[in-house]
Amino acid sequence: MNTKERKSGYSMIELVIYISIIAVMAVLSVQAMLSTTRVFAEIKSFVNISEGGVIAIERIIKEIRFGKSIDYAETILDINPGRLKLNTTDENGNAKTMDFYTANNSVNIIDNGVDKGSITGSSTVLTSLVFRQSTTSKGMLVKIEMTIKDTRETNPRSASFYGSAVLRGAY
Image (cartoon, rainbow, N blue to C red; front, side, top):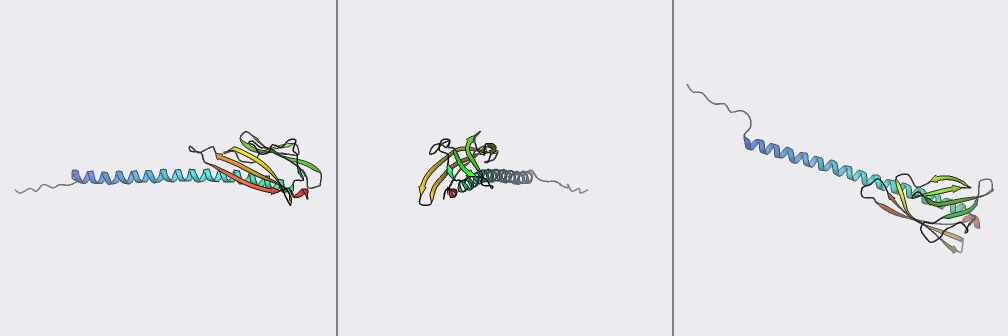
């Protein structure tokens, strides 16, 4: 009687090759997911910094443009942390003040004696705020230099923001 042995399954070499291919694919998949997560965190950090800086700069510039004069008694110019107190008017023409200052690592605002809190955002830290004043042919110019960093990143990023505006209420 002639019996043939039937071989079924995989040889040892085939198993090693298949397992190696699956392992390489798994490692590449994990690396791709980690890379995507890292890129997402970097984008989120950039957005946090940009939103905090742009909102603060735009608000300060807007109030400078409405300003009539600078209250030099309470303003700190040319050093960090700076403070800017503007004499201005409300929508009814009544005198009021706008005060921008640094507290708890953020830019804060006091509107006519009422503390309105931070205007930079909760996930960012203000590292520098400097106000500079110049005189131009159009009137008084205020320059703003501000540096903000993100607090949620393991490798924190920072960005500097610059702006300037003329006190239009003065002329």
